[in-house]
Amino acid sequence: MRKIAALMILAVALMFIGGPVFAAAQPDKIMIDEIQKMKGPVPFDHKQHTTLSKDCKSCHHQDQPGQEQKCSACHKDKTEGKKLSLKDAFHKQCMDCHKQEKKGPTKCNDCHKQK
Image 1 (tube, rainbow, N blue to C red):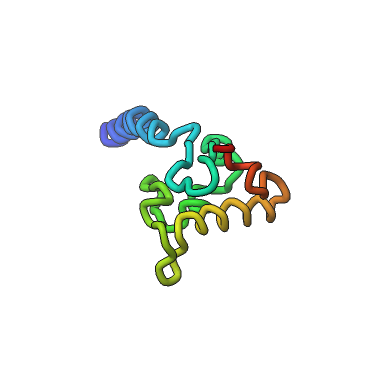
Image 2 (cartoon, rainbow, N blue to C red):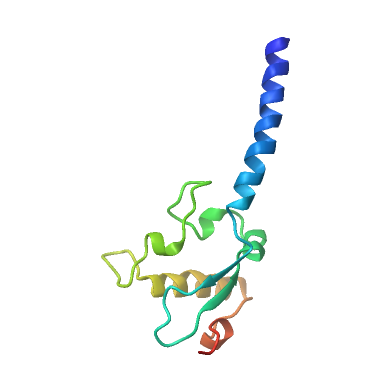
């Protein structure tokens, strides 16, 4: 009985400690500004997209749960083999989803702020 009570207390403590740490790791809004050659940066509402997507893997397709990284951690300036460039990865991921769901911006100036 004591073991069960101790495990319950530990589980509750971990939820209180781990929950805020995990939640703090997810920014509400992001400015995508890694690539700005011709167009301006893209404001991205991460919090809104987390409510629209079934899980984090929809966008963070190569990351393990709880270890999600920025897209630029894997995607670089140029396409390398099957790994798309950062620009192409953003465009494919975002625009394909918006077209599939039939909502969300799909034109350049809908996302990119003017310079």
